[in-house]
Length: 275
Image (spheres, rainbow, N blue to C red):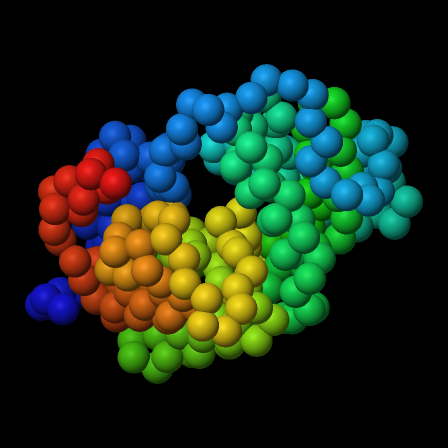
């Protein structure tokens, strides 16, 4: 897997953060990618994305605050529940960004999967979803401790004991997802948040936008994920839940070494362009 190199100041990771990299800019939008969609699947019509939303006026229930982050389809905000006073996160997905039936299905499936997964201390909690003419609003538990990625950058690398604890948590998330028939398909340090800023805060998996339901023995051919964490089986268009285990292994390597295990950026870029 290459030479394990310690990078105390994490300068390499700072230069190669995957939001975005040159590979990502040219082969996909942001760090998470899927293969291109034929023009025939594009559409321009009013859409209803989710079933059984809590309502169509989220602003009546929640007060929107600061922006927490943004992605390909929308922005996540910190919000306050006007009834309970609870701080929550709201992922706002703009319908204007949903340009294909596949985009709509991804959002629809993300909501279904978050409703389907059981409450677990290491998976961000789903609360409810709203939808109006402009957007889908996915209300979730607020995690205020930042990304696992940022802690890797701050440390440079982890001790074996600390890396083992983080990896155990990640594998427990994988186990729960697979037990309930879900492949995450985009496991990476950016998709794990800490509940708070404490050193021993709970680590929680987020972003099920590329996740998919599976049956035992079922294989998939769609190329999705983030290049550095993508299993070879994904590029071969023949994969199942084992790809999450591969991604967890890549995260473990980065925790220990501070650098990715694979450096063949041009080869990966070429293969993605060929799909």
